View 1 (cartoon, rainbow, N blue to C red):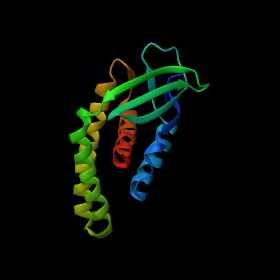
View 2: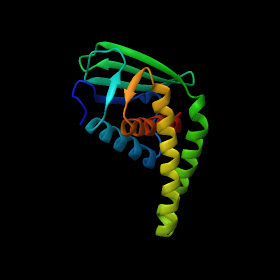
View 3: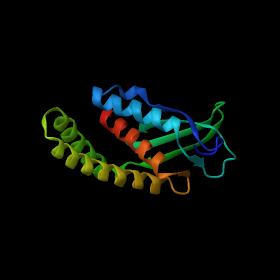
View 4: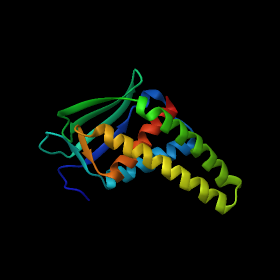
Amino acid sequence: MANGAFRLCDVVLDDTIGRSTPDVEHERAVAIFDLIEENSFTPIGHGGGPYRLNISLVESKLVFAITTDGGDPVATHILSLTPFRRIVKDYFLICESYYEAIRSASPSRIEAIDMGRRGIHNEGSQTLKDRLNGKIDVDFDTARRLFTLVCVLYWRG
């Protein structure tokens, strides 16, 4: 686990968008659980947390609102979704194929689709990490879990 001062203690997704399919809601729940269990999250220029993160979509922009555990505002970062559009679309399509394959395909077919899914997820995670550069320092595993949550918001919206 990362330094206790530079980590997330809570993550909330904007619920005004509504819920999605059971598969997507499961992905959300697992990503949030894993993120809280282990993460590295350092808002640049802030002395330390732990932090609470609220992720939302506002006017087609990704909003990361960060507060301390006590509720004091730390920073709000607004990111364009443009760099994510193709990756999220590709990820969504391959996840649909993956969920369908789980129900009916051979193990080798499922494994092949899953390898593609992981590759696209890694690309999205790196893109998010790059977009946060200079704003929030995160390790790759934290970026992966955050990218999953960005996808969930996309799927709901």
